[in-house]
Amino acid sequence: MRNVLLIASLALAAATGLAGCGSSAQPSSGTSSAAPSTPCKADDFKVTGDFGAAPKVEIPACKPTDELIIKDLVQGTGAEVKAGTTASVNYQLTTFSDKKVLDSSFDRGQPFDVENVGQAPVIDGWNEGIIGLKEKGRRLLIVPPAKGYGKGGQGIKPNETLVFVIDGVKVTPAA
Image 1 (tube, rainbow, N blue to C red):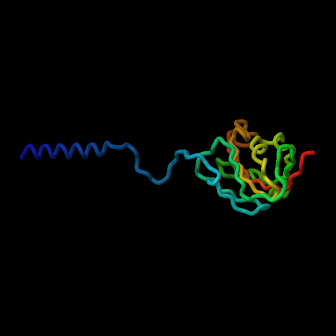
Image 2 (image 1 turned 90 degrees about the vertical axis):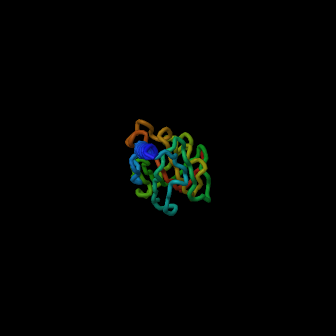
Image 3 (image 1 turned 30 degrees about the vertical axis):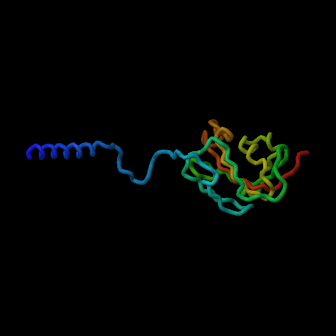
């Protein structure tokens, strides 16, 4: 009987000790300081507001993708932007990392003309991302750094992902 108690006591002590050594992780507090590991998708971004008015953009808690994301929010009904055309657009730029609006033609009340789309002197994300946009259409563009301002930044934080909402105001065919 004495051996049974000794064995039971040793087994209990071993089990208790092993349970304490099972994990060195701290209890979860429900928040994490680690960067999100799930890449963003177009549907993760929430945009509200009507065509012609400054939008409100909600940036999700996900990892920016290295791909250009294009999503039509409002299907246009007019002429379509094609390579070589001039697109008159309104836009709003929000930075992904700090969720701040940096630039907005909506606020200025003056559309921006993109001449010779595809070869225009704008970022690659625009030259690629506005092709197919129609007049009266609204489009979301998530532009990775490689198709934006890259590591140079040019007045924007280096390697910033750019979130644009673009309204197609007018499309003029190539001359």
